[in-house]
Amino acid sequence: MSDVSVNIGKIEEVIAAAKARKAEREAGMGDPVKEKISKEDRSARKEQMLSEREARKASRAEKPVKLKVKKTAPDLSPLVGPMEATYSEITSNFNQSQITSLVQHLQRHNRLRSVEMSASSPVKEGMNVKIVNGDPKFIGMTGTVTESRRIRCFVNVPGAKKPVYCFTSDVEPIND
Image (cartoon, rainbow, N blue to C red):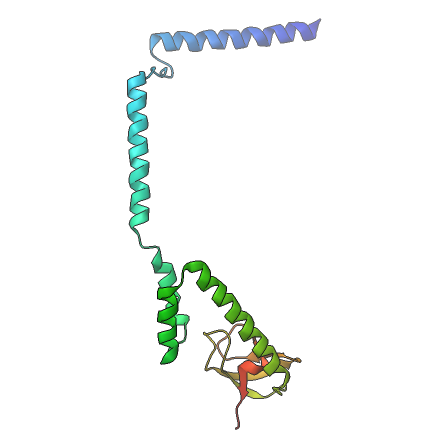
């Protein structure tokens, strides 16, 4: 029976606290009760929020998206002579899907050619080499071959965090 009287006591405390909060609210001393917003005010607020959202979207759309793409341009090697003319012709006469298809075919052709040439390019560990193809940020740099495989090699380039992974056809031995 003592558990029941303890539970009743707790219930009475909770009821008393609720009555005290109600009395405070009615007296204006407690938390203010939210006023009901009319339908007109609610729709006006909604319209304002929507117009602000549209303004934010418009300001984001005004920022040029091409900036990120243009930042990659310095990594590209320059086009010269007939390559520049071919590039201009392709970009002006073909749509995006046709250009994407052509790029995929060119990449496949280039990779096959690199694999074929790599098989006949003797590169041994310890050789000093110049990177002539591959990742644009390493083209023209020289380094030492740290590991040589059948068609690939690792070149330790000063300033690089780790050895550069290249096709053996992408490097040329340097005669010291």
